[in-house]
Image: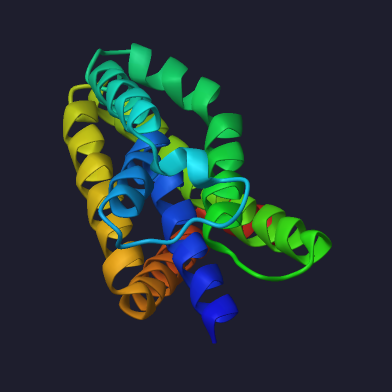
Length: 189
């Protein structure tokens, strides 16, 4: 059960990485320092004061850049691979006592995959916002992404089963909305 719970926590944190890279890493660091989350061997560094300071600084810088017009679009392009890497790292950090092959396979597929899907959705949302409003609505999009990253991070750490339900529900809604798009329907045949 502990292995499954670790994977669920990792998936939730990975979804948050797709919204903001450093918010979930900051959350993991805080939770580890306060004793609310156990990090597995090789990842204990995330629960140290220097890591907390680094993640807090990176979070502030990341959040601030998303409020600068047009820079937010550049950030989306730059952060897509970083979000995948962050999803892999946070999943591996909480996914426990299993063979290294299984740990990294699950971290790459589940953690990296979920982060990539969520990040792809946010890239599409921001591109749509920029295209339809000339970027005027992008600060609202940035705020919603930040709030989502914080909520999903907290849920993943404190209420992981509820977080999994929320992530699956949002994923289902995103897929339904995307498949109703005439462009996507044309691609699907």
